[in-house]
Length: 260
Ligand SMILES: Nc1ncnc2c1ncn2[C@@H]1O[C@H](COP(=O)(O)OP(=O)(O)OP(=O)(O)O)[C@@H](O)[C@H]1O
Image 1 (cartoon, rainbow, N blue to C red):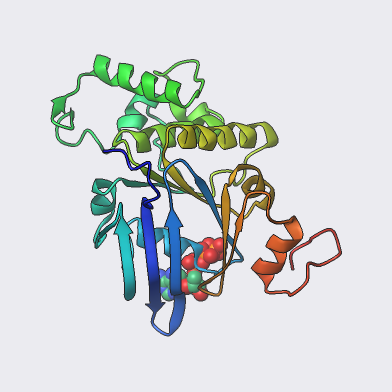
Image 2: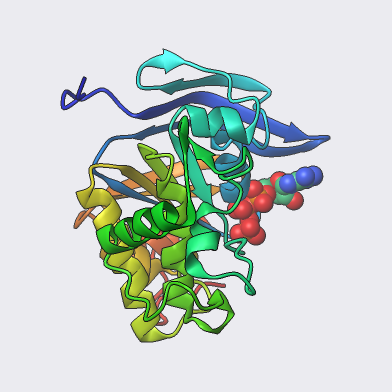
């Protein structure tokens, strides 16, 4: 059933997480809907990674509730998160440079002897499916059968996202997808994000790059010291507003928005 009604795909209520005496997350509320891109920003140590880990089943909240499509759920493991339709692409992408794009797209999902969702997969079928996934993201790779080590950062991100799409997740979490990329590759990756949204998935993007976030996000959530401190809709904020929320300043700095 399609939930075109306003039921959030993902809803966090009052989620807190401690590491010993460190309060990494404090009563965080977050909603994510289908077909929207939410940017998650904050200074170092703000709690972004912890939040992503909690949503991806890597860490477990000490208190609070997580709902997926309205149902309260315990995301005990990354596999449980994936089964709930949540897939995370981490910054390191976890690609095997010596393997080709097809093998990378299926990496870790062929463990049961090439069986995917109950179907046995042969190489030909894997090639066809990998090509279709990459196509759906408009990722252009000259050859699917050469090692991915020599591909551009944008293409590599495309392959990692294609791999995420094998399980047809409704929510994709991207951890710093544009970090360390040149201008044209960043544009490619922002286009990938737009495609994920067009596929009616929810997308949560962690980024330090406020320009990228402003460009691609329908909403921006700002974290500071473990708490969600602000939320802005597209077009409802300036760069200065974002910087002020991130740093906790009451007024935007006047010196070109440089973050200290
Ligand atoms: N495994 C851990 N053990 C102890 N403290 C942790 C652990 N993971 C995170 N923290 C602490 O929790 C707080 C939030 O960290 P987190 O990594 O979530 O922030 P972040 O916003 O992702 O920062 P960055 O942008 O630097 O990655 C920090 O004070 C951090 O030191």
